[in-house]
Length: 439
Ligand code: NAD
Image 1: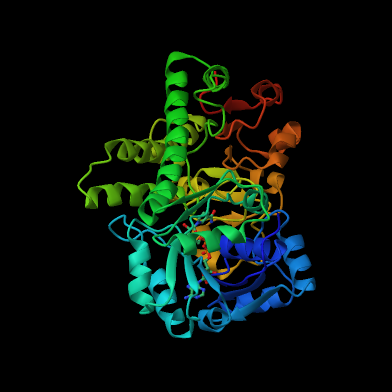
Image 2: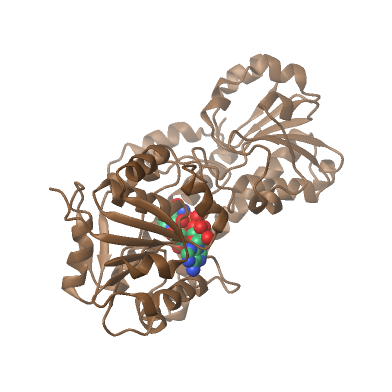
């Protein structure tokens, strides 16, 4: 079934907004994507894609060629011509852990006067319970509806996730508005769950909280494996083959990060607290994740034959991987950056390589990368290093020439926080190996 074409505005053309806009255009809708970043809009209008996201460039190019996708500066311009307006702006973590709704409020205030009567505003940003009311108040219109439609796409597989969703969640007080939003997805083979706004908003946080919990759980199990001499790969295989548990999201590593889990897990704790519930389990999930990042620093210290952080002073660490996971260029709250910041804080010199982080640097990344010497390939990052640390699971790291690595390094140790290398092969190249939860 194909969807009847609808005129759509997307406010905020980032990871979520650009994917949503391009994919809705692919489904046959007429889409205008807006942003406040003039450089981003210029880039998109020149046919370039500002982010690394598999398959997105093709979807954008096809939709533009078909005349169904355009990019404009400013939300009001886009909203004026639309039947449905998606808010895809940031909801970063506020100082008290709650979601900062200032971008949502600013965007809603801006589009209010230009909205068509009867149009629908869709909250696709991740927003706490009660945010449909926040938007309603900001737009100051009683002839439009506000609907919650949280997004579950993952960076790196965003296009595929959008076009083949496990489910589409729509929360609305008005059934007709919910069905108009549901109709946008008629071209997809997707389960559509229509509920009330509070439930839709809670689903998004609960989903991210649960996924973060799975990763924290397996990282805690990995720590236990190290203590008792068990092998985490065998343990994960053993528990993951239980259909009640499942094997997805059970990869041990340096801890979860990225633009969503850290802020959403803290927002979940805060939302619960604001409504009188102490979500202690979620607090534990966050605590385990913080510990996991520190445990990775401790592994580097041990690889340098030390027990104290002082051993880092004057050491040289070659880092492979900067993004919070493979398949994206996103550095936001990356565990890699967090570990590196600690290493630098305690006096280490860090040289690093990541396939998506190359010169010239975008100014937005400058703060995260401050003090890190970027290299053009893994061997350059490893040259003269006392220890090499793998912090992102880029597939190319599985193919490293370990003999070459051992030759260029000054020291002889690898810390593999993603368990991408074969420990036996590493040791055969004359290097000491430490993974996560591996014997
Ligand atoms: P992003 O930072 O990549 O993009 C947001 C864009 O909004 C930016 O380009 C910014 O310039 C623009 N913007 C801000 N204010 C604006 C305004 N008033 N008018 C027009 N544009 C404006 O953020 P993102 O990663 O796409 O996340 C957006 C929302 O989606 C967040 O709430 C996030 O939690 C949620 N989300 C993100 C992901 C993900 O994987 N990135 C997945 C699901 C949900």
